[in-house]
Length: 128
Image 1 (spheres, one colour):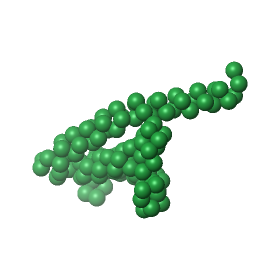
Image 2 (spheres, rainbow, N blue to C red; image 1 turned 135 degrees about the vertical axis):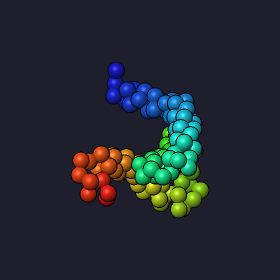
Image 3 (spheres, helix red, strand yellow; image 1 turned 135 degrees about the horizontal axis):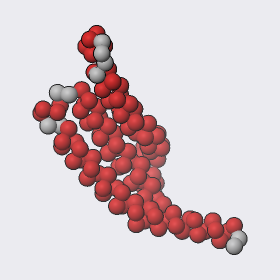
Image 4 (cartoon, rainbow, N blue to C red; image 1 turned 30 degrees about the vertical axis):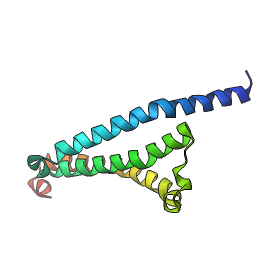
């Protein structure tokens, strides 16, 4: 098997994955983010600082799905390039994709640090 045919087979597999699996991931991701936002924005959970981190995490994750995954699915799977229609989107889509990709784990890290500090033995650390 030549390298050209393996490359074309891999590109074809990538197109089919983005065409058929991409929309499923987008729908599942959007639904799960919205449901998590509904749960964490309840009045009794909003008082918890960790819930605020999870709200921010879900918003950043939803924006990542809408900016990055949707764009790549349209571009690779369906050969639709949204960046051709908007100069702003063309310039900033990769920036936003990387930004939200880094922001999501940062919120989880902050929530973890918050939980560690709250469960500390020292009263002074718990008051922070």
